[in-house]
Length: 350
Ligand code: SF4
Image (cartoon, rainbow, N blue to C red; front, side, top):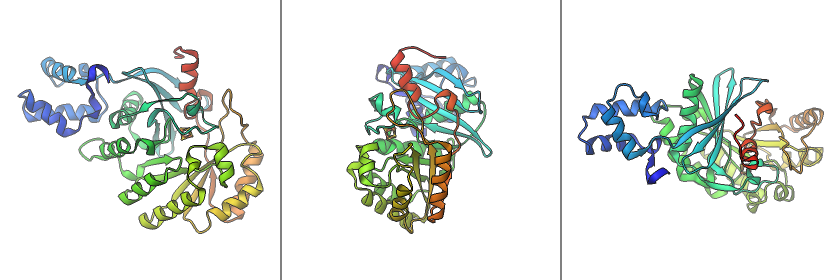
């Protein structure tokens, strides 16, 4: 953070009250400031109902510019928007806003980069910067909402990074965004996607939260998982699925598996058979994803015909599977693609 100050969206309502108290400001000032922060307004010049002196107190004590828009991309194919945010220490993250029938959904990053090394992922290729604070995760939602001038209806933590490798800040973010005194988003409108860090899945299960859980699976056996996801594959697939069964048993909630399809790698009928055995009896849904290709990727995406054959094969084997709609393919909306491209070229692409 700049000058050792806390990013303003990392403050809790109690922190804002404390700051006001320390500066001998009446308590209603804390409510006014909190109301701006809950809307994602961090620029003090826009806090029109507070005086210049109070704005200065905020600026002197917090980092009000901890996250700024570096560039913005609009899809010509659909209504997808991608915001590239520059953090105060120079790290770059991406946030994607998609429009569904139910309203706007935002896909946020949990880390600047990722340590998990998945061989099909642009984020892994760009290396790891640092984990984001809960305020920086919140900032992606609220700042994007402010830029869109429209309420965000759902959040998926599925952008750059592994959220369960940043567990405490993730839980802090969930607590902030669901705070009825703050943005007040319903927990059921949040989805967290993990590559499968079993100890954290167990910890998350014990929270008995209403937040949706998705697992990036992508392989039906350990050998293939080691090839595609070397770090998460340190956990045996059987143990991972056992932890998913425990999640479903303890929470009563369905679990989602993300499965990107790579031509000739994980889209065969033998893979469909293995998935059937692996997931037998588990209350789950499989989200098939037409994999994203990027420069330097060793894999090709499956053709739409192969995707369709695979989806039908899963259905015939009693598995519930749908193909996820591709959004923003013309603006590199897939996780990490844009950050990597910007760092490779070292230039803004606005
Ligand atoms: S797929 Fe997810 S977990 Fe794997 S490297 Fe990419 S961001 Fe990290």
